[in-house]
Image (cartoon, rainbow, N blue to C red; front, side):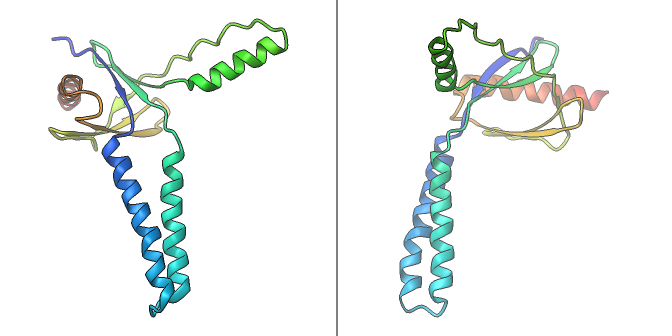
Length: 167
């Protein structure tokens, strides 16, 4: 049985909406605290700064990830390149009269699925480690990568986890 799959993973929309809601509530809760509440200005300042921090994090764009699983069960995780940064670099090279080809993406090392991974029907929390022992955690929700791609990804992760228990 082949378990090969490639899925593009991004930040779930629901998570970003929840973060925006929490940030807005924290900013709005600062107004009553600053009024005549017993906690006063320090609590209002803490609430407002926490809310602004959450809202500022929304403006940071997170690059989508590509999760590739080969037919033999090797896992590779790669980030998409930022298109705007690549276009800026190409334009900068043209201004200086250089005609450099775009650099090829570096091959990513294979990863292994760690025992602490959570494989639920609508959520996958994958703990992946590389050869040096660095651990990466990836959150995959059902609605983000398409229902068929999520199902195939979940089946592939279950198969890899079962192979890991056998050895």
